[in-house]
Every structure is written in structure tokens, then in C-alpha cells.
Image 1 (spheres, rainbow, N blue to C red):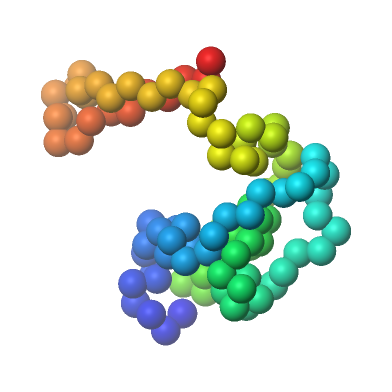
Image 2: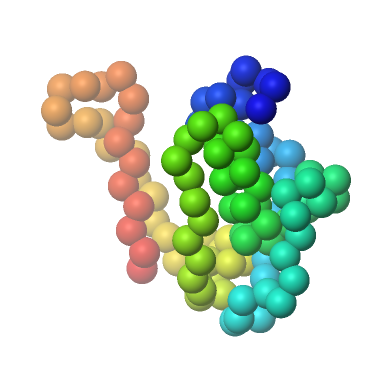
Length: 107
């Protein structure tokens, strides 16, 4: 990977999240066709599989031991429906208050 900022796994993930628009899967099954990482970049849109494969390709290009694990998720997760989730910000109890602790629960 010729871009030094992409040698950081967090920056790779941020790049994919910002550059590629998420397109939910239409059905409760694995897709029959998956775009290549180059095509996903060209289109700047992809489903969870295409975005995962793109991210892993970038990470492997930066010598990270990364791989894709596939499975199926409920529709409310695929559509990014966060109405089922409750998020509470709390101060860290360990004395490290440099950043808040986020607690997420699914109702």
C-alpha cells in the first residue's frame, strides 16, 4: 500500500467507512456475486461483504494478518436500524477518565 496513512488499521477502517457508501443486502442469504475490491472502490458503494473484503485487502497489503469471516445477521442489523439499541455514556470506574466508557445494550 503506497499510502503511509493506510498502514494503520484504524485509518484503513475509517477510509472504507467514509469512502464507500453502505448498501444493505436485499435478502437473508449470501450474495451470488461479490464485487472485487477494485470495483468496490470504483463504484464507492458496497454491501457488508464487499466492504469487508476491501478492508481486509487493504490490511493485508499493509502486512496485517486479516481475514473475512462471513455469517448472516438479522434485517435490523443489515439496515443499520439502531432503534433497538440503548447507548449510555459513563465515566470509567478505573480512574482513567481520559475518555468515556460506552455501554450498549440491545432491547
